[in-house]
Image (cartoon, rainbow, N blue to C red; front, side, top):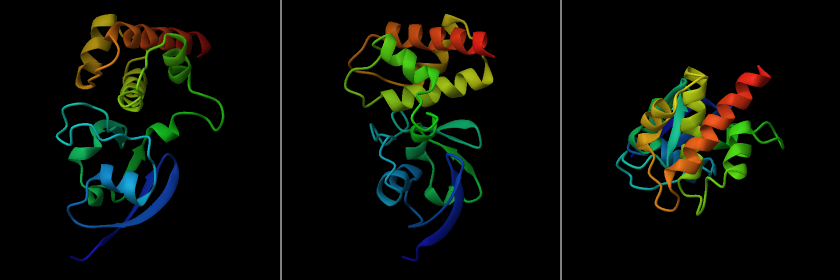
Length: 159
């Protein structure tokens, strides 16, 4: 098969790669670009571990083909922090102990950031609904929800 040349922007950096027509964006991120933060959980779009943004839209990267990234702006967990300074969501996940094994954490943080970018003042119900596509087998979701709501408040106060 012939590989396709793709030019995209990932976490603000113009990036080029070659991929097979059937390679998922998840495959490309992990195997071609060595961005290992995006995790593979189910490969069917059911768990949210591979959540990224494509043109500011939250998607499961296991359901997007790598060739579809042509010209798009991709956001991954690696782009959340500002160099060595953690994003407030990352800080609040640590503060609230909203993580354990770490498989779901990057997807949860990317999803939560997408929520707060769209709605800086979500209710608890809105937050639970938004994150319903992210499965965690280790923690209770309460700590995750508390971390996101606390981050939202902190971000509003700093704005």
